Length: 185
Image (cartoon, rainbow, N blue to C red; front, side, top):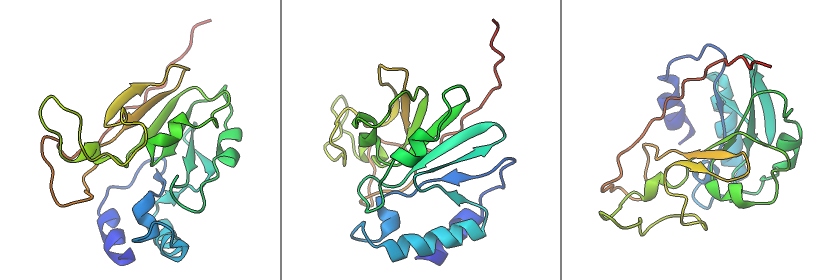
């Protein structure tokens, strides 16, 4: 499995400043708790230039990414990454599972949280919410969410699946354009 995943990521273009990433539940094997699978995958990803952030931060071109390990896994410990963020600098938090946004862990963080996990529900009847959504907060399907305290979250539908079917939920690769904005005083 590790080599198959690596072949997919090797085909991605190189990034100018870096390629930060976080693991999700499936990166820990079938039962979501096999650390040896995650360790092997992490080493392989680093070999091809992808930085797996596990409850840690890294700065790329002036933008700091905090990567939280998977919420369902055995290594979820957001405090080191979140307390390392400087609120005076631009930051982005990567967290696979959007349910993390509702935990009382955020302190003074204000900014974007980028997430996934839901696959948009995979199958969504017209005008109804998706019946299969692997989160506690059923509001978290896909797209942008204002969290009401200076935090915003974007949940990507991704290209994968839990079951080999999608209906009314297109696969997605999101491209964000980051702009350096000078603040006038």
